[in-house]
Image 1 (cartoon, rainbow, N blue to C red):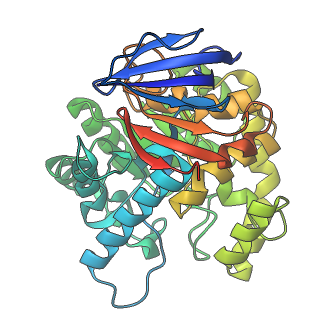
Image 2 (cartoon, helix red, strand yellow):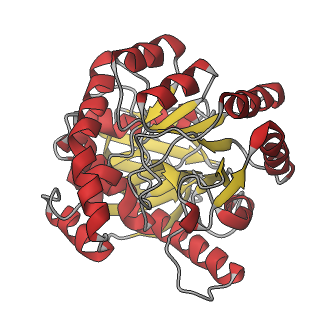
Length: 401
């Protein structure tokens, strides 16, 4: 049976001009045809949905996520795993996030949900998993429950091999501190010794595992790129050499603007203010985020102007808010809606190694799609007007009333 979506404006994330009054034909989970005209002759087995002028585009991606934290004392691993799965499912059906990349999840919860959401099982986003993120003793984000502390070259080698044994897709290395943490966990400081970082990257290269590098200052960013990081996360502080290295190496940049731009003092839109109020950041963390915000914006803008390869990741929860808030911040900080949208679709799929299969609306690709009532290229907030979510050609959420 074919699914025929007709009378829609298609934003394929290849051409910035929408295809008006188009039809998308789906068969066996893949896009069979994208037509500029009306639907083809249909058979009695076909299902035809008239989208009445709505906008059809690829499903959204968030390529830097974690399970929610902090968690109440006494929460079991089973409860954490269940909550993570529910969070992922709500992101899919309520915000149209059809794929995510994990930046760290304790107990290999991300691996478990990747397997659960594969194929025709329960409706959830595609998951690219990394298990624990690896950091030093006294390293970054230890209170999250997702960290594994390592020391010395062989400590890192053992931890990386163990991650691989547990069937992860990539290795997450925290090379430096962060904005959100205790006073000894600072984004201006790097953590690994040269022999530790060189061993970690060498082993990942040997086994052909991409490195997702948490790097927040120029020293860490340049070292990550030099050693072959597939992606650099955050880069709150950069210099001209960092931007040059990004461009020459082809490394991906995931800026996670939400970490520095969503404090109560910086939130401007209705949705930003609501999120900041719910988050209730501790006063010292508000100060740190506010102090880092302008430099982070400048790093983002420099990368954008230089043509650095960039994909959209939020580093916040819950999933029903994460990518939508991050998309808004991209535009607020200087990106066009087109740049933000392609970062959350085409670029994200390419960064995760599945560009030939996902991320755009083109014949032959898997039909992970969303439909929204308004044009997100006119106003990125129109992505919140979600009507339909499809995963592999199957309607998994229908909000048309």
